[in-house]
Structure formats: C-alpha cells, structure tokens
Image (cartoon, rainbow, N blue to C red; front, side, top):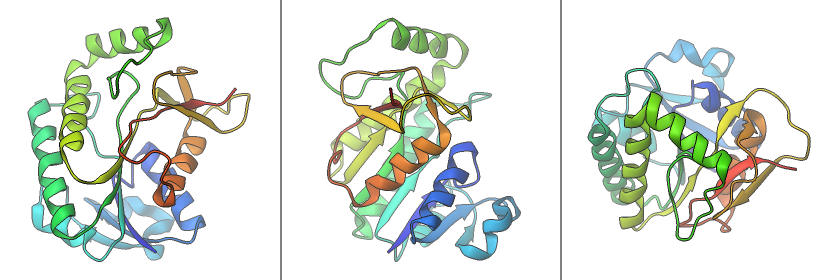
Length: 214
C-alpha cells in the first residue's frame, strides 16, 4: 500500500516515516529539501516542493491510498491562521479529486474537537499557555478542524498534548474523544498510533485525544 506523508522531516514526521517504512508501506513525501530525509532519501519517493504549491501537492498524493499530514503552523512566527484554513480547504479539494478518502491529520489537545469534552486542569493549562505564547497556532488548528468536519473524507484528527522524547511509564498511548489522560506523549508511541490509523476504522471522522498510556 502506498501512502503520502506531508511534513515528514519534522520532529514527529521523521518518526512517522520510520514507523510507516517499518510497517511495509510504500511512501511518497513532499519535501522542500530532500537532503533532510537523510538515510530515508533512497527509501522513499519524494517530490521537491511545499504544501503551498498546488501542483506539487497533487503530484505527491496522486497514486496513493491514504495521506498523513503533520503540517501546521510553527510555534515561532506562525503567521495568519486563515492561511492554514485555506491550505486545508485546498488539500481537501485535491484529495477528493484524486478519490483519496483516508486522511490523518495532526491537531492538538489544546483545541476542541468534539461534543461534551472534559477540560480538566492540565488540559486547561495547556490551552492557556498556547493562547498566550502562540494563539495563532491554536486558532489555525481549530480552523483546520472546522474544514475537515465539512468534508466527505474519512479523516482522523489526532490531538496530542506535549510531544516528548522521554519514555513514560505505562504502555503506548491512550486515545479518548472526551478526556485527555495525560499532558504528555512519547513521540515514538504517538507515531505508532498514527500509522495504525491507516487501516483502522476506530477513529474515522473523529478527533481522538492521544496521550501517554498509564
């Protein structure tokens, strides 16, 4: 099975790329600088460009069966949130045009994603901190979510809290639509969860909160 990855050279993206290759998936990825793929460069099919280039984006997803996106506003100089809303709208158009229904995107635990969610103190603090230091990021991720809800895609919006290299006690990750069990998650465990969603129906058209297991 061939899948497309967007954002494969970032902190989380590299782990998802590794886990997907380990799982036997064929990979197409869109990268600004192919050299950042490092040792993975000769193991994937890549398109040189960025997500704002519509032709490059369509070239990347063409011929794939699922798309995983880890693209989003950076904490430093995130820019106008409307830019990311427009980018998501364009991506949805491209996926639907190419008959690709399965789409997995990374949001965050600090924005809403369902009804009757629990906002316990740890999650409230996450939201408060992000609203102070990088409010455009919070707004952008919520706008992306609103776009996905209106689409016909079989999406899963994965919403992690703080992503860390640290290995936490417990096993893997815990996913829940309404409750965030912890305010941290290990990057490798999160990558495993994301790759597992490619062929899973459990979180179709949902936005699970994903954190370190207990």
